[in-house]
Image 1 (cartoon, rainbow, N blue to C red):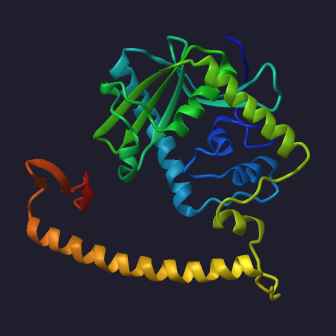
Image 2: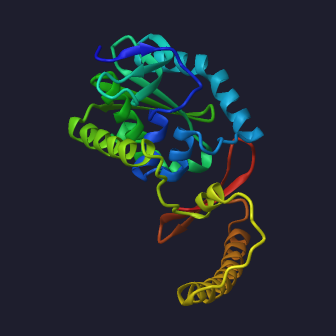
Image 3: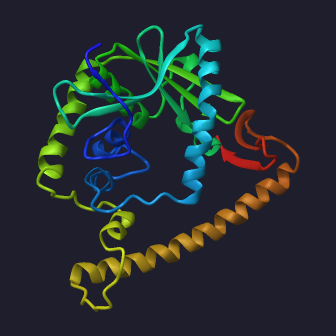
Length: 279
C-alpha cells in the first residue's frame, strides 16, 4: 500500500475524490468555482433538509450494500469509510467508501432512477458516468492500488457493479490538473470564473439595490433572452400537445412501436408513477 491511512475528518482545505470531477469540469452537480468555495471554506456549503436526509439514508444503506457486494463477488469488505493521504501532495486525499479483501478500492453510489440512463450496463462492459470514473481514478492515484469497484444502488431492484482497472496515463493527467487548480486557485485564493447562474449567486448572494447600465453586448443579450423565452414557451406548449396525443393513443400500453421498433416507453416505477421516456 502506497498511501497513509488517516481518520475521516469534516474539515476541508484539501482536494478529495468528491471534488475532482467538479475541478475537471465534468461534474453535473458542481462547477470549478463551487469546488473552490468548498475547499477554501470562503462560502459555507449549505445542506438542505433533503440532502441531509439523502446522506443519512445512504449511511443506513452501507451495511446492506456491503452484503450485496459480498454476495455478488464472494469478496468480504474489510474496511469502510477511511481517508487516505497522498504521499506526494499533502493537499491530496481520497475517501474510500469500502475496501474488499482483494486489495482494491470501493465506491458506493446511490443513483436516482431518473439518472439511470447515464449508467452503462456492466454485463456489456459499459462504464459508469465519466464523473464517477474521474473520482475512481483519483482514489487509485492516492492509494496506489490497481483497481476499484463501483457499486451503483438504483433503488432496491437495480444493482450494478463495475470493476475499473487503473489507468496511469489518465491518473497522471487528473493529478496534473488538480495540482494546477491548487497552485493557481487555492493557494493564492484566486477563484475560477463563474460558469452558470448558480455560480453568480454563490458570489453575490445578496443584492445591493444599485442600478447598472447595460452596455451594447448586454443589451443584445437581453433581447436574445426575451426571444428565446418566447420560443421555449411556444415549443413547450407544442411538446405538451404532442405528448398528450401520444399518451391518449397508448392508454395502458407500456411501449410504443414505430416500424416494429420500440420508440417510447410509458411504464410505472416502483412507486407506481408512470414515466414517459423517448428511447
